[in-house]
Image (cartoon, rainbow, N blue to C red; front, side, top):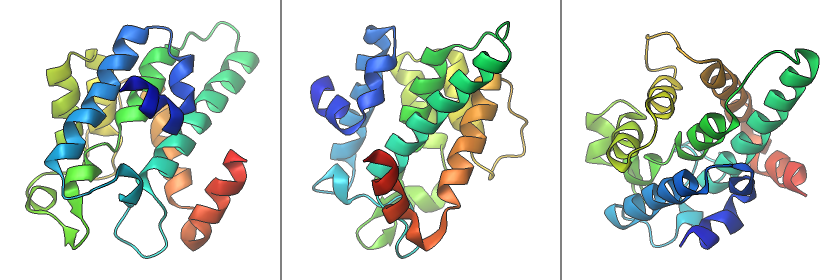
Length: 178
């Protein structure tokens, strides 16, 4: 099923450890049947009207993280970033929205757990590296725990900028992906 996810998220191909990439795709495979969604493309990024799709948001976040990382290492050649950790974290950071939201609004799980808890839990259970699990858990402003990894700082800011792009979000993402 990894091929289907790579079609939706082309930057999966940038992950060097393809075994971990396959495991991450398995987390998406695991989450979708637990949800009320018939199709992953129908899952919104947020419950706000016009927020765009979770798939587009995740794709844009992965792309933005990769570009920021490359810009950073271009300016600071001695800076070492783990692109696999960054991209795996970006791929999985919001996967729990599949079960946090339903076509009718927020689910019971979405009301019970802090955003990203279920994604971090699924990533940990799947065998993702601790850095990935930590970044997923700490990417949300709902946590008051400081980010521990530079890759997480990149993700948190890239994702925040994409999320804050407003009501023209979907148009902006579509244009960026063209």
